Image: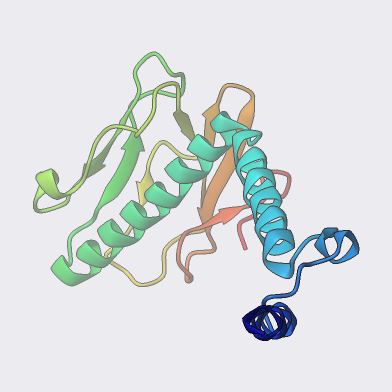
Length: 173
């Protein structure tokens, strides 16, 4: 009789939840977690590819323009605070003598005189220097930055701050 009792117990264990053998049909397919992992890996890979395909010269020029806008606005604020005339002048139109200088600032060590990258040149449209103050209203001014075949312009309407402007439109916003 002990054999019949063991057979009944074994039958009960096989039929208990979690002890069933899975059929081949229930093992096919993917879980939701597996699908989410694959989709996220594809999204990360495509994001990295789009960053890698970006033009490095265009990115460098955008960084230089954003930095120049910040420097011009900082020098403009210092000019208004000190009451002294401050000018920004590029050293050369071509890239042979890169760099620029702020004339009239009280502490020249606060302002850089070099571009972040090599090959960047600047040209002021219609003037030799950009006058930054001390008056709150300055003349409309525009600076064209060049790197290789890329062009980007920075300008002001005289009342508003310096911003990156459209190179096709001759007047700043």
